[in-house]
Image 1: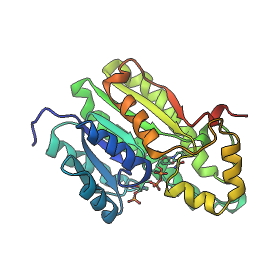
Image 2: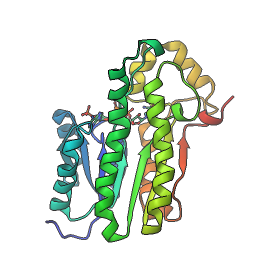
Image 3: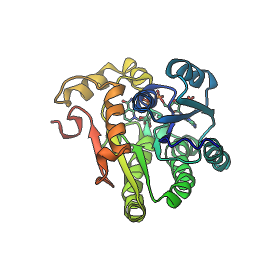
Image 4: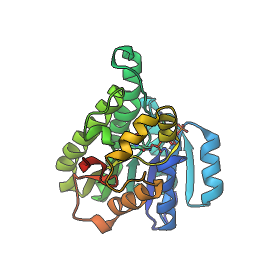
Length: 249
Ligand code: NDP
């Protein structure tokens, strides 16, 4: 076990997009950061670029049975988990009537049930320290209605409710739970969605007062703030980082 007095974080989906940007910010701030994803190549690449404070672990978070062993592995190696960022997520764009039960369940399993199961196991390790910070990642799909993303919207709306419920239950024990609702951020996920649907892109930017898409680093900055003691009196909030998209006309 590594007994060095260091801050240890887990960032799910830390190998790409928004999760990678969060990991970069954490590592710049000397936080040992375990990144979790299914694709070993993506994680390996991140490790190559980010160095010794970046610790890749390959795991599929929709496989609930594997989650306790994953958390145990981090505790065995580092002795503690101070921060969990539940960033991993998948999207699925389909007409409402075309979505099968399996489609719906697949999104819910990754974006919601996996987040619950990982948070539960991590909280068990935070409770004895009476300190911890969990940051969930929601979406504009939880702020207003977006067509053709029914399962994604359901999962992200549930994440915001879970953030508030966990905050009320766990904050008295020193564990803060907050959530970031990113607006339209330039990553693989959005470029795929927008390249196939320019009208949707124009609509998204048309109601964004700042008029441009956000960068993954914008979410990284917010995650660093919510994860660390800079936000020590903040719990249970959903922070839009969206160029004003959620309040735009
Ligand atoms: P990416 O597709 O770039 O990243 C998603 C990450 O999640 C990948 O690293 C992927 O790794 C990981 N992941 C997905 N499924 C699993 C799984 N079952 N087990 C482990 N890891 C998994 O997307 P973004 O960076 O854009 O999105 C990150 C988060 O931000 C998501 O929750 C998304 O919903 C949210 N978001 C994004 C917005 C945007 O504009 N980009 C807007 C609003 C919210 P791997 O493939 O290796 O498993």
